[in-house]
Length: 358
View 1 (cartoon, rainbow, N blue to C red):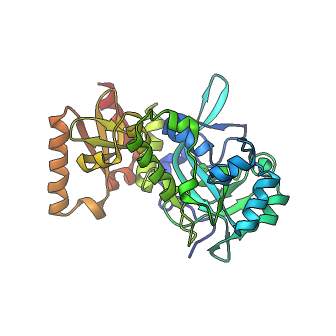
View 2 (cartoon, rainbow, N blue to C red):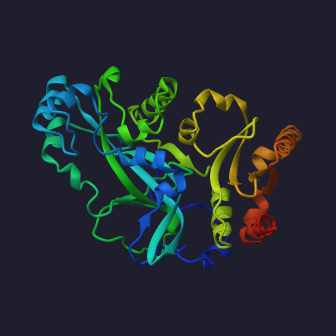
């Protein structure tokens, strides 16, 4: 059962000394999504608005033009087909805020999809509702979730209002910012779905890469929700990873989050960067590991080892084998235990900083 406004538990006290940790900054800010995820995935998420997915038959009815608000012809097409629509929010959580050239930016650590819900179940709206609502203004009022814990099913309180209120009782990393919203048609024709031109242009002429990309879109963006469990798109997997990330940022360190390292030494932060590099999804079978954090210039992989998953003899042997494989391709492994992070994330970040700087 989903809970409302549940904070991340057992926060290390020293993190509350960091700027904008205990509450949001009072000024305006932008979310630097492309800087964290790369242009491909950033553009992909930016295109998730209006009615989705885009279908060829609808494009023909509208003379090749698709707007956020569906045309009369599109509405009638949906009505005749009997579609209803799930409202799905692209939710971004930030671990820190930094100023660049006078502009404040939020730095993402997690991106997920969350359906609108009613009484604990995904809700849908009909064609008439879509026809009456101005979808171009669906993000007016800065919609957000207060108490959005991405490591549980706690979605918090859905709020809309001018500006972004500062709640001094709620840490900034559990504010779930609605980056985009789209309405998933219930009866779309999979064989007629079109691909966004900007992203497909990055893949070149490869039909196999395009097929991998399409599979991802159907399995993530266009799969109807049958419960309100969020779908993770990218980001940290645990609170202790987040705590270390926040502490590292206080030292000016900004590693890549969740990076695939393959046996041939190639490094891919996301599936999208694999495809851009001409590498198919099946190459993941050659993955040595997925580092929690990675410093590309220094070729240093950081692993956050929880007691639950890294204490047994079998787990220790597995971690050692991974470290040896990484060393063989010129990557240094740094392992930091969960208890050490809970005791002092700042000390752990200092340890990483000293290694990176030297």
